[in-house]
Image 1 (cartoon, rainbow over the protein chains, first blue to last red):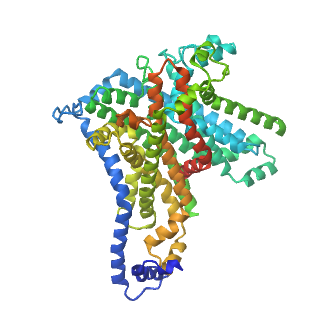
Image 2 (tube, each protein chain N blue to C red; image 1 turned 30 degrees about the vertical axis):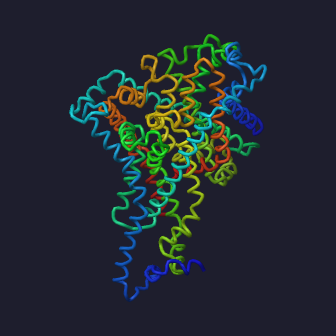
Image 3 (tube, rainbow over the protein chains, first blue to last red; image 1 turned 90 degrees about the horizontal axis):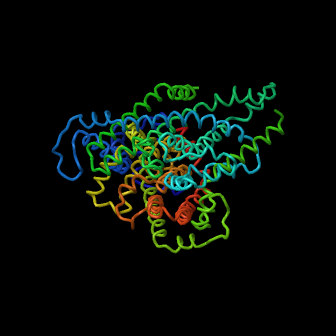
Length: 333
Length: 273
């Protein structure tokens, strides 16, 4: 009833809209359609403008500015007057510290996939069965993911202090010889980072895979077991293929996250010791922000973006495209 | 593998995963009840005796409550901004035909490719020029802007899935398009709105890099920033740092316990979208 009384001015146009949708052309169709057109445009403008404004001011503009600043030598205070062309890029790509940071990012990308995929998948498969307390279990597994990276970093930083919790715990179970300078040894620090990152993010993979598994109709597994398939056969023939899209998108999110890693490293090591754990983002902040090299830092930001973009596009081109094709096929059905 | 053995195995794995998952969190919370002397003497032990002073001094410190307030304020403003502007844009992008619609949608999805990191230096300069460096808005506005692409990507398929018949029926009953948005689409998409809201709030609550660069006064600090700063200021007092960290993470964890299904639903929704 309230619907009927709403917005008197629009009823005729909308009735026309409804009528024409039923394939019965109204007599005044031409003029009412064009009036409706203008109204429609106004509505679109009204709906889209706030988001577009926010997006342009605080995403597109600063990104464009980063590209612009990257060809200047600039401390962020004086007018832009020292145009240096591509020198910032040359310096960045020639700097062994930045090249090391890029290598660290790719090491994290690769190892995150290699470690978290089997681990997450294995745990998810095991937990995907009726089990008392499973809801609680899912919540607990999710705790590290939802915890702020900064707070996780502080806790791990303290646990990994020499003669701290980790060292003492290892000694108490007879693994005292495994003790390292977890964050102080340039040869060890990246491995430590990977352990902490796995702890922080494997829960995300598990929960995502579990959700994907629960989207698989149980009838498929019932049919498979009726046909005499073992648990393993059913996982291989049914679960994994159907989980494919979830896995591929998880991998995408994981890769993009790895390329932008900052909080954890910044707090735990600041990129050290001797730049052994620097990432592109920590390099950007320490060069651009702490040393007031806004032009140079912007060039680093552009390189970071370009690398992320290339990875994302390649991945979408060669991996995700299949899912899109599958989905389109499904829609046509 | 018989059912019973594999079940026992599954339970064992589940317990091991939970133990590893919770160990650092439990370490922080329990160590907060010890003194730094106890921690140094034996890092792996229960409090003996249990000490409450670390926690009471956090709870009575004005900076802790101010940071909690700052984090909450920034989170709420970020969430409100992104949900309101996001659902409006997503509605236009899903239920209107207009020229440039796909271009606009692509523009927003392009935002998924721009991490905040890329824009962080110009953002800092922009916010400095706007004199927002000690204001919650200085953090909330960019956060909302960077959360928009994800929000629109999640909401658009949801809004698009509302049956056309529903809109036709509403139109026959005299409901305008905006009326349909306000009276029917919004209530029906409430679950999706709560989901994107929760995702935006959690991201804001946990954010570190942007507050680190933007907020120049300690009175404006958020909890993650405060915890990290506190840990470098009081490196000698491990127990105090852990108590502070525990108190700072508890609200988020409680909130998350209430919203776990939303977060998971949102993440899988984003994946499917």
